Image 1: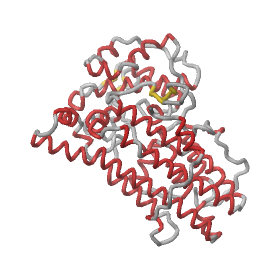
Image 2: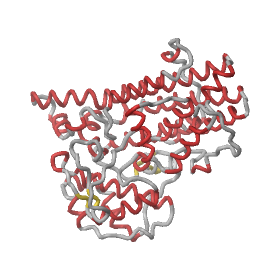
Image 3: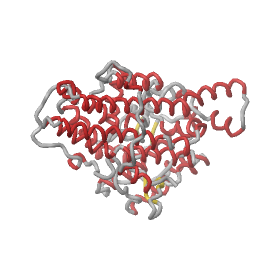
Image 4: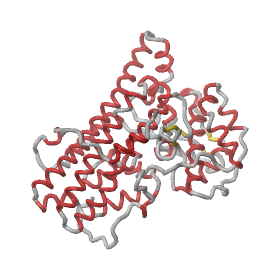
Length: 433
């Protein structure tokens, strides 16, 4: 939230930004299939891992007919088309790893992909809004979850995307409470702001609890050695320094970042609400990642930013309970980002070190050797979005700490887990297995 105080005549609502009361930024009930005309796309997209394994995906895409996109009429059709085309694109580019990348995306894929992307206001590359927000279905009446489309990596891919989906789901009560915080500040209602901030804190903690499932469902060697490259883009990536030519779109190569947790709108919302300031190249990267979000979600973040400053309100009120609740909320966000650093250490930093050892001494289990050897060397120190990973994450964490009003160590304190909330109940009904 900004430092300037403005009067907002019409209260914000989730609906005006196409955000679901039940699912937040997640697309409710994504479409499972496209009209029969687009069967050539779906037949390939549903079999990308197998086609990559047989080294035949590029051949199939070369033989794929050039289809018109005007028959895609609804938002859900466009989102599924974007998901399918992006899955095919990542598979096409990275089929042979970083050593045999391509310079041109064929017309049969590039033209419809760019047309669909333009209609959605999204970039023509695989993004968080594809793999997580619009890539799920209920497998049975009990609410067990499954992916619509997948990439190489087997169960670990499924776990990675669905655990991330549960993190998004856990954030929903906090997302809804952002509006109560904004309205409370506007109406000078300390009790309303305090209560809403407490819900935000509990939601961030619930996100962390969901995040912990990553250890149960995702194998670090599979994530690092097999999955990561298919989430990688062609901007700030030494494997593709010139970018990628989208044939028939323009002759000059285009550069787009790969998938990144920074493409999730939810932490951007919490940052803007609490007044977290991200500066320099890290701030520029985070701002750029908003161009990889659905346009209405980006607009919601910008609207939070333009509202009266919550932090200034807390300082002006000098209310002990409000101040403590604000500080606790900041501490929860710091705690979540610390946990993210731990996850990255286990899934990227340690495997990267292990990869260097295996390459040097050629020792290790056969399965581990196979996975690690296929891992892209160019990404050992970088995220798939192109950021200098660990430095970026620690700086973002430290900038969150700096938002704390007090100079004491409250940011390092963690209170007991909150009682069962509505989102924990919902998450128990929407499970991975």
